[in-house]
Image 1 (cartoon, rainbow, N blue to C red):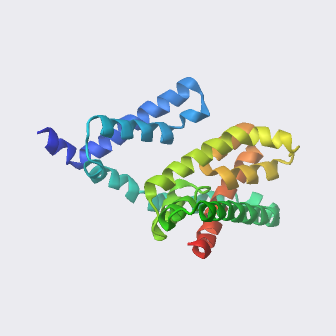
Image 2 (image 1 turned 60 degrees about the vertical axis):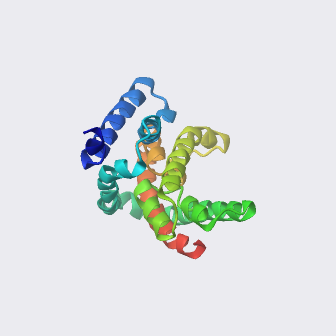
Image 3 (image 1 turned 45 degrees about the vertical axis):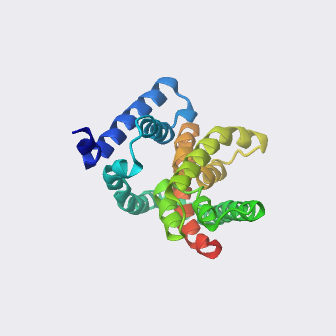
Length: 227
């Protein structure tokens, strides 16, 4: 009976839902950025499957439904750019140049590091889109033969690092322009960083939101040159 339940789509969906709710409550209670719901829920799921020795293929029967929703979620990002079109018009050139520089810098850094350490092509493809939002990063990774699990982990870690370090780096380099600060945060730490940018200021949040969308588009194109 238990094996029948584990093999059903309800098992994967129920496990994801329960772990996500627990992770969200933990973040709200602690207020710690490290307790990002994506990271915490993923760790809980991995521990649960490992402790009870449940094959990943059983979990993925239901989990694949969540993966299927990443396509529509990616398309919805275009709405965000449209809603912020006036801000984008006023700062079009700096935003595009900043996003291009951020995307190119991230991809080049990963490409050179992977070459230096002699990693496999699959690992390199998995790491290249680490600085864009998960929905886009997984699509880029899979198209290049990457491993989605590694990509998702890299994206979450990058986002948390960016959200934690962004205020410190802004003070260190005396960045006071809210547009520049927002673009930098969105370009390097996507949605997780954007949540921090919204706390810093409305302009920073708006520019970070635009930046994460544009960087997703730019990275998709640039990644083709390095895969």
